[in-house]
Length: 257
Ligand code: PEP
Image 1 (cartoon, helix red, strand yellow):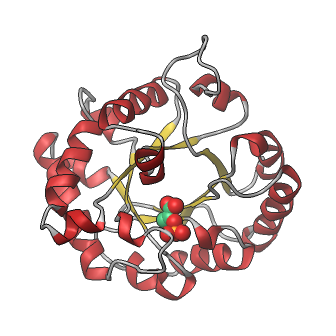
Image 2: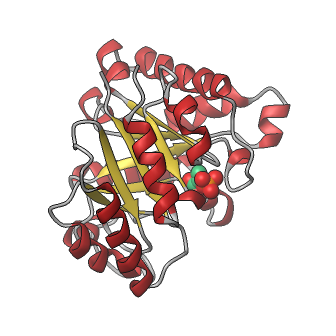
Image 3: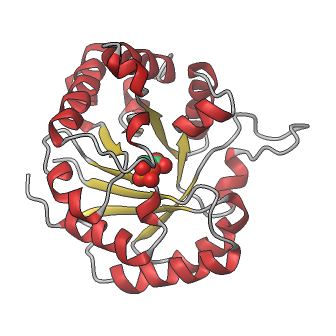
């Protein structure tokens, strides 16, 4: 049985003060949720990671970052490394989000380097994959998924892949209010799991947690999380308010599979 994992991607929102306020509100609203039911992660911007870490320390909420660079240190102006994230109290790191692929030239190759560096430093990568609307309409969804998954996982061993989270995020559903139907999400998740089974083995594929992301809200959480191969959610817009994110987490914790 795979434990659900709900992560909030705060993107480029929230100052330090706003981060402290939101993280405290989430802590209050979610404190009684047993950690055996669902993993909860928040991913604030780099500038407020340390303060967020202080708020969530010893709580059932873990901290994630939204990106990292694969080198440990050096003359890489503007970049942040895995050891720096660890030092700030980070446990998870989103890698290859479609906004990074679209606006910051992220490729499967850079995603792969970042995933490896994250694992080497004990961070858990949340590796994002997903097709655009154009890809879907051209019937290329599975081809794109295969390309993102095989490219991102290149040269990784099964024991490394078992630690990773993959987030299936159809680009057409991110921030658009359009959600993949539960059947569309299940179909893509099953494809990814079967691919990992083919590339590695059955155990690795069955241990791998695959989140769905794309306009997840309190109203559609239960149905999406109820799908057999959907193991959680990566939430953008609805993670910016304590009530909606808490409600997504609570609904997920009630899903029976
Ligand atoms: C995301 O940014 O990963 C995301 C899924 O955003 P939203 O929930 O707003 O669609």
